[in-house]
Structure formats: structure tokens, C-alpha cells
Image 1 (tube, helix red, strand yellow):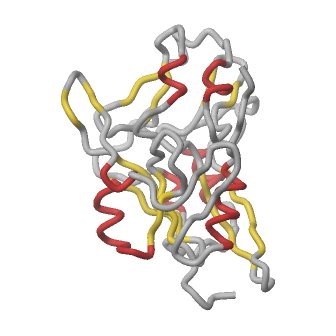
Image 2: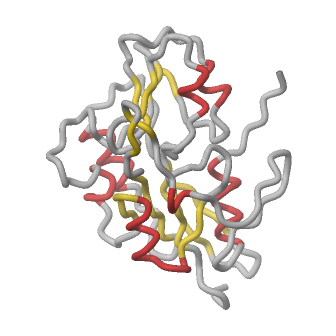
Length: 222
């Protein structure tokens, strides 16, 4: 089967280029707002409130503190790739924006549906998590993920889990959010993030209903 990958870079580049909307073409035909604001997973047969991230393009300085905090707080090994990435995007009029992204914690994760070992699941917050002891390293999840998120170290597949495996106290934000001094990252129920940001926030895409919103530049911002 042909593998078609929508990279996080291409999605955020489209967000930076737009003003209050995401317009994406290509093989997936992605356009308009997604359903992240009312996304809900299912745990043990009951609905859960989906948690996710809000990324503010105009507030990110590109400092990379979120990446460093993630590595340190989660005690990532040297063979483990960064769970979070900061990339830059230049608009047609010359202004450069930065964006920090990680796993999209999709409401309908294809990585989970294709895992033959049952190593991937959604927890009570709708966060997509991995049982590394059950992972068999087949890489089906990487092939299925439209955002190219899963990576592999010497043990198993690895990715962002909202710092849940780091055993943060309930109510504590992930380390990346705690480290951001400019308010470029927020974490919480997607419906709440959407309500707080209002019409300025748009869903990053539609594939798998990702739980990531982008606070795009306002109209007229070069």
C-alpha cells in the first residue's frame, strides 16, 4: 500500500501562511476546520474529554526550551529522538514564525488501530500512549501515522505521552508547557482551549482528528 505522509512541517507551514484558517490540499484533500474542538476518545466504553495542545505561532521565539525540558523531564536516553520539534516558517512577505509540535494525540489514532501487539492505547485524557514492553518494533504505527510522529530507540517505539509516564501530579502541565516563557504552548481539554482562544484558533488538520490547535497570525500580519 502506498504510504502518504502529511508532515507536521507542511501543516504548520500552511497555518503560518494563512490568517485564521488552514487551507491544505494534496493527497488527503484537507481543508477548513477539523473536529478537534469536540473530539472525544472512548475508554472502557465511556466517553472521555480529549486533551491536547494549543500552539501560538506569534508567541513562539524558537528558543527550544520546550524540547530541552521534554528530554530532561522524561529522562530520554541518548538513542531516543526528541519528542517535540521546533521549526521555522517564513511567510510570503518575509516574516518568520516558529512552532513547537509533538504527537497530535488524535481522537482516532491510526497508530493504535494498526498495532498488532496492542501496545498503543488512549488513556483517560484521550492521550495516545505506548507500552514499550509490548512493542515489537514492527513500525506499522510509523507507516500509519499521517504526521510521521513515531520514532524508535534501542527499546521500542517512542513518542510524546503528555509527560504522563513521568508521573506528574494531576493538574500539572507537561514539561514543555511549563518551560515556555512566552505562552506559546497550552495544554488541556481541547474544548476548553478552543473556547479560550475563540475563532482565532483552528485545527491543525483533519486526518485522524488530531488534538492540536493552532493560534494562527491575524489578518494583515506579514
